[in-house]
Length: 213
Image (cartoon, rainbow, N blue to C red; front, top):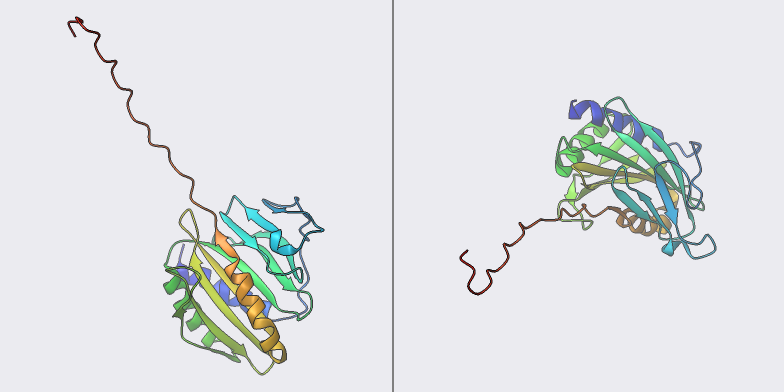
């Protein structure tokens, strides 16, 4: 399975994500749907709501109720999962989450995705830089013509996976939505790795006084 084939799909998906008219494949309801679940009371502020996908090993905490989470449960033949798309109801911004096998580091994924986007008509990007999501996370900004801006964040997942977040929004709303996109990306995190209990051999009983052992 070549990393370039997987990143080729990532470029195609990101190009598609720039269209604001993409329809939701499925709508996630609290506590239902796919392999993920949404926890929290629907009447409570969304900062208390947490979407968990135990199969792919990640969680999402949405920063505001304006972010709608749609499950897709798509998976490419190359092994790239596209479990959810998040849409900002007011601005039209959206964030596509991809979960890839760890065939490369986050930096390598970001560098090759940047190279692929720069070959697409109308795309310009910054160089990948370390970002604050984690010690190994990297990201870059991009623009498509005059109408669309976006950013990509790549960080390690659990179980040898990599999490890639691809955000797009209309250029005229950049100042209003950028902070919310950053908050949402910070809320996409790998679940803790399951701990492995270490078993110690049972101790032999202490000999009783006078015991010849």
